[in-house]
Image (cartoon, rainbow, N blue to C red; front, side, top):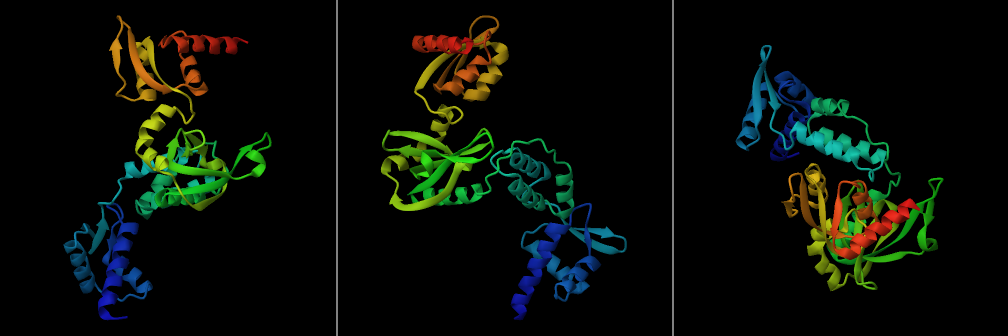
Length: 326
């Protein structure tokens, strides 16, 4: 190996070693570093190590120096992610039902490794296993990869779609016939991943759960202009879709006690127009795609939250209540 390339490899391995195996509580001494480099077949002595550390510092890598016994010690403190940030990412992966347990374990290991070997163990030891509803479709990562490729390349996709029966077995819809769809976006909502598509036949959007898709293929046919235009409206659409279920978009007026303002903001966003209506009541105007899921959300506040308008939805709310009683 040419001397110049050898120096580059040495610097790269030195930086990797410090990033992965050192922190303020676990500095690597000169002896540690030279011994590890020797094991990799990279000769290093104390003098050249000091020069290498100085060069990395000049290149804006923050290598900290301390004293360990009678030796110098080196460590990397500043990382791309802090421990709290990595903890949030790990918890998000663990909480996501659509990621299988096997994939969750792999991802958590990779995320924890970004903290370095010593802190990685701390992160994994502090993890609470609270999600027991993990899905079992190991193909979801491949599905996401192919669907993302179709979206980037502006292509249509085809796939089989299934439900699970009482025995947890796949039951394919349409007797296994393939669906053809024009992808608009991949959307994460309520612990699940969805593919939002445009249906030219119905001139509307439809959502498919990615973990319920099988044998996904990217087609050569281009997505239509309507599909492409919808990509700029994904944020608005997903907010209105209300937990990924369709329905007619309506402006509703709700009245509720002040104690439920947080529930309304959580569901419809903190920009929801709201005003006081008496000493302990509030009124808010919200835009919703009316669906069974919306009625379910509203029913949980029965006796506290009132639907004031529009009149036809007030009547539909009463009809929903009658169905429940039956």
